[in-house]
Image: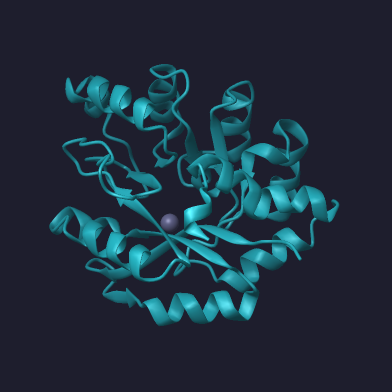
Length: 243
Ligand SMILES: [Zn+2]
C-alpha cells in the first residue's frame, strides 16, 4: 500500500481565527483518509505572540511519531534550532500583511544572509510563503536551500507565474493544498512528480478532500507515491529512527 504523508497542516490555537486545531482532530482526519504521518506547524498569530508554541509542536512530535514538527520562523529571522528535532521550517509573510502582501524591507535585513547561510547548513526544507517577486528575490540569494511554496503559489500570485519563474530551480518545490487538479497536473507535467507534495492545509482544507484530488489525477500509483510521501521523506532526510 502507498504511504501517505500530509506535508501541510496547522496545529494548536489561532489567535486571529479564534479556533484551535486539536491533536485529536488531526488524528481523526488522518485515520479517515489513510494518512500515516502529518507535518504540523503553529498558526502565525500564535507563534508571533508567543514563540513557545514551537516547543509545544516539538513535544507533540516526540510524544506521537505520527507528527512531523516544523519550526515557525520568528520575525527576527532566527534559523531552525539545530539541537532540536524539527524536520523543517515555516516562513510566513515575515513582517508583512499575512496572506496578502510582503514586506520587502525584510530582504535588506542584515540578519537575512545569516539566516540563509545557517538554513543551508541545516539542510531542512522551509515552507515559504510570500509574493512572487519577494520569493524570487529570496530564492536568488540561495543555491541549494530547499523551499516548498504552498498552494502552488496561489496566495502570492498566479501559480503559472510561479511555475514559469522556478521551473529551472531544482531546489524549489510546491505543495498542492487548496489548488485545482488541472493546475496540479500542469505542474507535474512541467517540473515532474519529484517537486510536488501533497498537503491539506487543515483547517483551511480537509485531508480527505485534498487527498481525493491527488488520488484522482491521471497518473500511475508509483507516480502518485512521490507526491504523497516520497518527496517529503527525501526532503526531511527521513531516518529509520522515526519509524
Ligand atoms: Zn497553511
